[in-house]
Image (cartoon, rainbow, N blue to C red; front, side):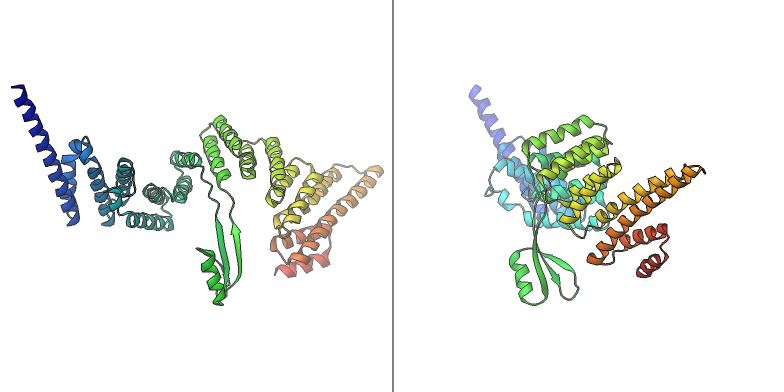
Length: 418
């Protein structure tokens, strides 16, 4: 009797397995002929049994992914359909653990990636950051080697003010040790006079040889590691989790102790926290790690200027200009240090009385003020002589000549602005 029961059980298992196979074939047939409602209905019926059976689990997830992909192609709830497809195809890859697996090799990967990329790009162009971030995440889930799309999804999540999603993506990027540095191959289009980027050095060089492009150059973009950790920290700051923000930098800097971008990023968080002394300390550390970085010197100048340390500010601005001779903001701020110093004397002058001693002091301070203004003028005049007529510099120069009462030079600069 016991043997008969065992035999009956075996027959029952065989019958159920045969039923699953038949149902899955029905799903595949309906997907192929475009009857997606019937395919979904059949898939729902077989889900519980198929996902519990190793023999059919992989096929089930493959068909679920295929159904999601076909639904997205037909414009049916595109983002959710793409998400279902990417999750199901990921499960197939995990179960087979081989790119040559029976179902893994059948995944329409290129078409799915292309569709998700198109959806993301289209949404981004419409400034629909909510759907753009979802689409770009699915590109990455479908094709995990294309990490840049996860980075794009994180950036768009920030633009969408979806900080929880952004934080999740940035932490994943950090754990992947994503660097993001790129080599750009550039050349100027002769006709449009605009610089364009090429996909490879060979392509760029061929276009230059054709005569259509000139001035080829190669540019290495900086690592995004610092930016990623900075954004993790800034989101923590936004959420009121300042300790976690600082811990994020401590952890990152242990892994990358000589990465100046991380130090700069940490400094920016302290600036956000209004700790200007720590900001300055970190920027000076970054300057030692990256002495050729003009922006670091500029920021050191700005913080020194804010703290009233004008000589230190001037030295930093001059160093920034040495590294980048056309650094307009550095020129403006360098001249502003003298203007501010002169303006401070005006306050002293206005506080004086009408005594003989006060009148004498007033004249002395007035001469000192004018001398400081002239130092600002000399520096800006030298800059435009070398770098050309930069509007913002000319505006500041005109205003200082006005304050000096130098009508001739005021009119000269005003004419250059017209």
